[in-house]
Structures are given as structure tokens and as C-alpha cells.
Image (cartoon, rainbow over the protein chains, first blue to last red):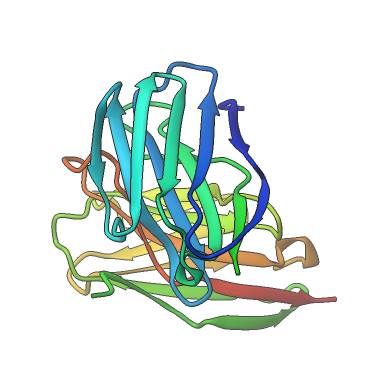
Amino acid sequence: DAGITQSPRHKVTETGTPVTLRCHQTENHRYMYWYRQDPGHGLRLIHYSYGVKDTDKGEVSDGYSVSRSKTEDFLLTLESATSSQTSVYFCAITPRDGTGELFFGEGSRLTVL
Amino acid sequence: QQQVKQSPQSLIVQKGGISIINCAYENTAFDYFPWYQQFPGKGPALLIAIRPDVSEKKEGRFTISFNKSAKQFSLHIMDSQPGDSATYFCAASDSGGYNKLIFGAGTRLAVHP
């Protein structure tokens, strides 16, 4: 078990409100990722991090920001949530550097009304 | 643009049959091709993966076939069981790209008893 905890697991919010999702890991993995999962699209990379304060954009980063001030925490923020951001969000880590493998958390289901 | 195309979207197989899911990719820099299995309410979990130096990899009832010239790879599930009913995702990444996996859209497999 790579020790990933996502919070909250479920959230309902209204359009225009800010939302922050948290990914916490306990094993000092260097790489962390945020994906969103939507029907018909599989999983799409939002942002990723390759170290403390080192982050970069993925393929669907518009409307999202991230921060990583500590190795163990990777935060995903929706500054002003929109209905198109209703999705299931997954955090992932690379359990073994150099393998290419990603290990995913259990997901956070976000509904924007 | 969809860099990894997966088919079919859904698949129904009888218990004991063979399930086959196909993927095609475009980026010739990809050098890691995993398959993930996802059960409802859970995060995707690595099932099996292959690198382009081999044409086939088998783990138990699961086999990846890889065709580098055609830029295609497939997952075969032999002796399919009802417990294999899940959503399957193919993915690809290149080793120079921070393990950023690009996923296919997914295949929902139902194995009927």
C-alpha cells in the first residue's frame, strides 16, 4: 500500500465557489499527480509535481492550480468552480522511480451545481 | 487530440470466454504501456504492463500483445470470470516525461455467468 489519502472523498458545491482537494502520502514519494475521470474520456492529467514547489501543467489544467509545500501533500484548487469541473478526481504517486507505474488513491467525487 | 484510442467501449463475455480489448497510439516516443483495472468506487489499479522490447507479456490469465510497427497493443483475458467485470484502461507514457500516463477512454467489461 503506497499510503495515499484523498480528502474530501465527496463534495457538493455551487458554481463560483473555491474548492481545494487534498492528497496526502506517507512514504516520501517524489512524484505526485492529479487526474480527473469523466465518462468517455478515461483519465486526464491536470497537474503533476516532481518535488516540493516543483509543479507543471498536464493536458487539462485550465481552471485548476496546485501547490506542494511539503513532500507529503499535493493540493488541487479550483479557484471558481464551474459545472464542467464536476468529476471524479484521482491523486496518484509513482511508488518506484523509473518504473513508469502510477498508484492511484480512492478518488474524490466533486459535484458543482 | 486523443493520443491513445481504445476499443470497444463496452464488452460482454460469457464466463470462460476470452475478452479482448485493443488500443492504438500515435506518439512513437511512448515506451511504457500499462493496463489498469478499475472497480466501481475505487481507483484504477495496475494490472499488467509491457515495454516495446518484447511482443508479448503474460501474467496468469492476462496477456498483453504488442505490435510496435502498427502502434497497437491489446489485452487478452483468458477464461474470463465474473470477478473480472470492471472497467479497463490502456495507457502509455515515455520514460523522459515524468511518468505522465496518457489513458484511453476505457472499456467496461461484463462477464456473465
